[in-house]
Image (cartoon, rainbow over all chains, first blue to last red; front, side):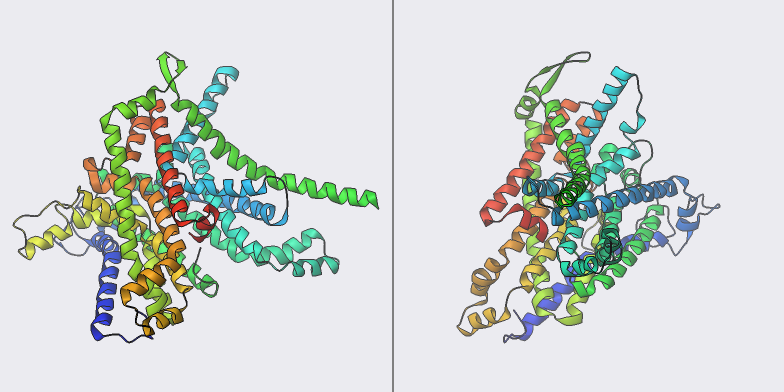
Length: 288
Length: 294
């Protein structure tokens, strides 16, 4: 049970066996995806036909489109990055504002507001999507009927995707940044003010540097959550599909290993991001 | 003097309003008003071109039409099963991370457990599809090993959907469990063991009561995510998935029947809220604490 208790040999063998089985379960799908990016066959399926890089660089003789020449796929990757940059910027900014609001001010209805800020996290993503879709369409109709304005950004498309993802990712950045600000030692700030620093200088030289790990961490998490978001995006997407939606569409039709190739890149990018972040946060316990 | 104090108070009020504005705008324009609008939408019925009347027809359809009912209950039951399986699978791993291993080995295993969840759900599902479909890796190996004559289709079963859902949810169970196991004092277990308690007794009388907050947090989050999942059931279950979110999508996007879709959306929201509330009541915890823990 715990190492300090007497235990038999077979219980630790059992533990080891369980651990191995668990890790196989965890990594089998990922390893499979990575391997079949290099299989010399038109579909990601066994048997193994030999090693190829066709699914990255394409091949004229086999009429294969590789990842780097698949304009549709690369375009959707660009769309995902664009959306994620917007969502990250907006979410971190509002998270910072909310952290100061909740940690530094007292006002009526603060408790209620604190609970409301958690609500987006418990609403299923699909419902966030349809509610924003319906409301934006109603606004668009209204402007069209009464003012003769055609407001395209209220129709399904990237602006709505950004707003939909932002609506719940903002709650996550608020939690992370508030938690860090709560642990801030106020005497540091008071000392700076006593020594004649302006409020603005104090913010810039003392509070923001202190908050930096939380800002970087929540930005990374926001970017990743936006990049991987599927449910909300599915409901709000217009003509330009982000990568997850594009991949989903192709997976339903039975795609070539070019999807494995792009997945391999996503895996590497995520792993690098995760490891960098975990190194940074190692001394502060597991990431929130 | 009073003038200075008044100016300072004014400045405080001004900064309060400046900080309050984005929060209020976010919560009202993107959460509160759209949901109220969705509620209105679900309570109306189309009676002519651009003419609507107040009605409960959409909800009536849900209760009359056995298909909706069936899928609703099925989604809820499958989500509960997936949550229970996730707990069973995550419990030992979290225990090993928190109590059996220590130092570098423990943090290494923790990091290894987290990495798959930094990778898109789409990629993970693609992996399961390549492994399990009729022309896939596992059926291929079963034939090679002589266990089956022909490749069997391993996709499109309920069990496949459950495997995918449990896989996707593991992280959200492991993290809160590790947290609550780590705060358990080892000497309690040693004392119980010295006094002759069996492993079963230690588990039910010490570990589970201590970890209850973490268990609840994990279960609530996993249940919510599973219920609202779309990608995993539709890709791994195919036409047999019959997941409730898929019905909402069909009504909204394919059939363009927004009134019906809105009503189904609210029913899903009600189910999700009800079960989260029940979970909190059963374990006597507060919503805010659970969300922070998760």
